Structures are given as structure tokens and as C-alpha cells.
Length: 261
Ligand code: MN
Image 1 (cartoon, protein in one colour):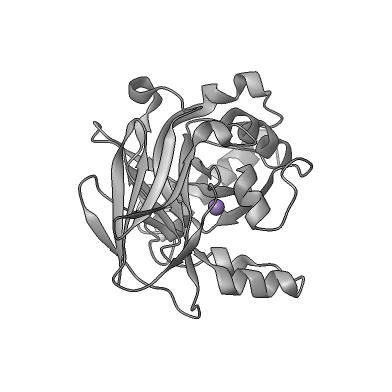
Image 2 (tube, helix red, strand yellow; image 1 turned 135 degrees about the horizontal axis):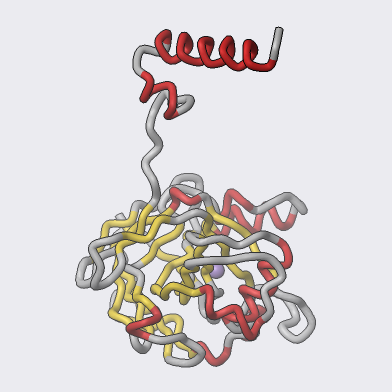
């Protein structure tokens, strides 16, 4: 067979396949999923477009006083990270008190109020001085934790995923673009339960800054647009029960509130 003949045969075969698939357009679109998985999105303040989440990273023990209350030395340990499943996001609108379901399997359910950075781009081995260029915006978040399960697994030297990764475990307010609110390196961050302040600190007490977190994370993972980073919680984490109303505050952003149901 000559080269021309072979091309003719291949083209005819492609046409036959397109016809067999029903419509040429369907053939061009490639394999179709048997069901649709909805994307995880977070609203953006002042925009009709939304932020699509790719991954949720969390940093552990990033405030010295919280590191001490969790039993580690804040001066020696490098930052460590874990992930929550993307669809663990629970969006909370400004001005709302969102119902947050008390999860299964725990009797010691803890709040952790945190600043969240949302990336618009990424890479690997990002230098700290370039890291903030990748941040699209910031939000207030709650890294909700089944502390008894986390501690129990840690005591057995097993992965404590079940304590951190479950439905609704990543509570978050809307994202505020950097273009409007700038970057956050200091400012009061607090959490009150039923009107009583429990966590009260300042972002300037973070051991690793957001830029340093991004730089470190990018050594371990290729970061991409859609990755969000829960930047750690200050001291005085503690339990909540059904009926409790949590109020999260961060200087420069609107409050965020949930009710445990
Ligand atoms: Mn946390």
C-alpha cells in the first residue's frame, strides 16, 4: 500500500467511526462520564464568577501557643500539611448563620478558626518572595476537627485523616480578591461561641507566613489554580455541641457565623 492509499483508508475509517458514534460532535468530545460530579465552588465577593476548588491544604500547628497546647515545640518543627477532600467545603454567606451538621462518630468536636489563602496559579519550588503573586484572594475559614478521633489515631500512630477529613469539615466564607483587600500578615483573628470569645490572637503570631507556607507546600506538591490553604489556628481550640453559634472574626473581612445542628 502506498502512503497515499494508507491515508485514504485511515480517513475513511475515521469517518465510519464518527458515523457509528451517532454524531460527529459526540465523537470529537471524547469519552463521556456516566454521571456528573458537580464542581466545588466558593463565591467571590463582588463578582458573578465563582472560584473553583481543586485541592484543600491545611497547615498544622502554625501558632506557637497552639503548638504548645497540642504538645509540640513551636521553635523546632517545620510546618506540616494535610488535606481535606475538596467536597468537604461548606460555604457560608456574609450575614448568614449557616446550619452546620454535628458529624458522626465524635463526642469531642472542635473549632479551629483560620485565615484561608486561595491561589490563582501555582508551580513547584516557589520562592517565598514570589509566593504571594499566586494568591487570588482570602477568606475566613473553620478547620472543623473530630478531636477524639484525631487524638485516638495519633496515639496509635495511625493516619488521623478521619479526624480532619469528613463532610462539611471545611467551612469557609466568600473569597475576597487581593485587588480589594490586599494581603494579610497581621490583624486580629478570633472565634466566639455563644457570645463568649474562645480563640483570640493575631495573624502576626503565625510561625510560618502565608508566603512561607506556599513556598514550603510547593516543595512537596505542584500547586495550581484552585488550591486553597487553611493557614493554621491560634490557641484555645475547644469543643462545640448542637445548638452552639460560632462567630468568626478577622480584621479586614466580614464576620462568618455557623450554628451547630
Ligand atoms: Mn487547623
